[in-house]
Image (cartoon, one colour):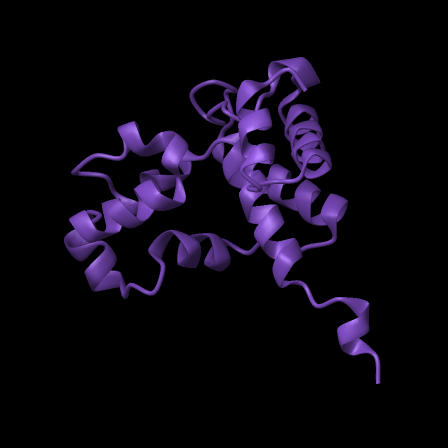
Length: 150
């Protein structure tokens, strides 16, 4: 793990080291990159060259690898928090409250979250760490086998 952000994220309890490595492996494979070329801090679009179809491949591979479900609705709801559409993005532009929500959700992209952002542009902010956090959240919310026991 040569990525300084990985060390910081793991130390801050944001993601488990094994989970971080697994997410990096999935994204590297999906994008045809070497593992060393994929670090948590990397933006998927601008630094790793991901396109919209790559996001689908990444999500499917993460779901398969970690036995979780990552729906588009879950990603949008996480970005929006409890905000309704008109509060989050009136007239198709993310509001100041929505921008603040995104900055708290994606601190690694905070400097790129600016007035005029449209909801369809949000995926351009995603980093490898974004997906590691999503997987971690899905794993935390997943019922354990003990919870299903009679």
